[in-house]
Image 1 (spheres, rainbow, N blue to C red):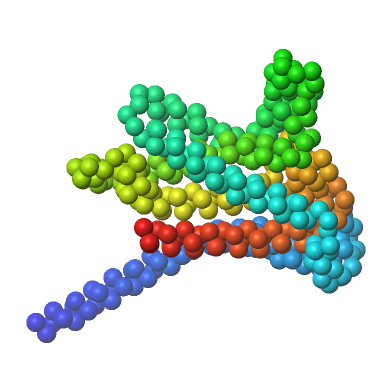
Image 2 (image 1 turned 90 degrees about the vertical axis):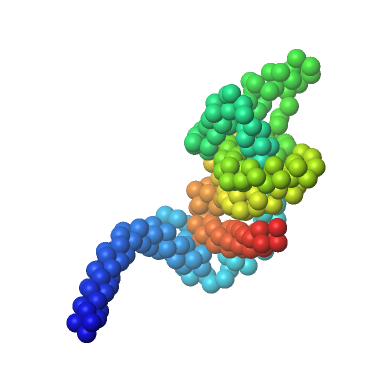
Length: 307
């Protein structure tokens, strides 16, 4: 017995050393990803913060340090309020519509329908298309001269409608296009959530006399809370960063009537050669998206616990 205990201790020590070496090799696998993150994300972010304190035009090698001038300029910019409001509409509006329509599609496609595989593919297909291409596709529907929608309207009216040039309409048109393109993500997440709900719960609710709406409110919706959290946060951040569709459909016009913070930053850099102010808008956008996403995530996580 006395010889067996040292042998067991040596075996365990050897196993521990092997596990440590294995963990060390596994940790080395993170190094390439960490280097890519540092080089292409973290360093440019720090450079953006530095540039936001300068008057750099984006091209000249010489620029001056101007302190907080660009940050105070944001509060004096007459267009900034409208741009932040547009960004909120793109983010919140798209997220709400994507989750609502995606949930309806998921509930419909979770039934025993013969062509549900084809329908899922058709709904999800726009997700894999570039946002820029999607924007140009819909631009040809809504454009003033020769657009498909105006061709239809001319059958009932004397003049075409300048939908993309109307500040009261173009923001919602862009929100609709973004919703159409990415609602497939919400649908897939909700489908995965529905498939994880045990059928026994529905059978028990049916035996207790629960109707369709009661089963949804008491069983389906509470158990879909994790899927709803992921879908809402993903679609919210995606809408707040919306860029390609805006550039393709309106290029933020007329003026800045349909601009988001992303597209405004693009116009500042390449249109007005105001890279310092563009970097400042980018920092503000990062802070706002981080705060909104964090608040939404914490609130939705608490809802999961409560349900």
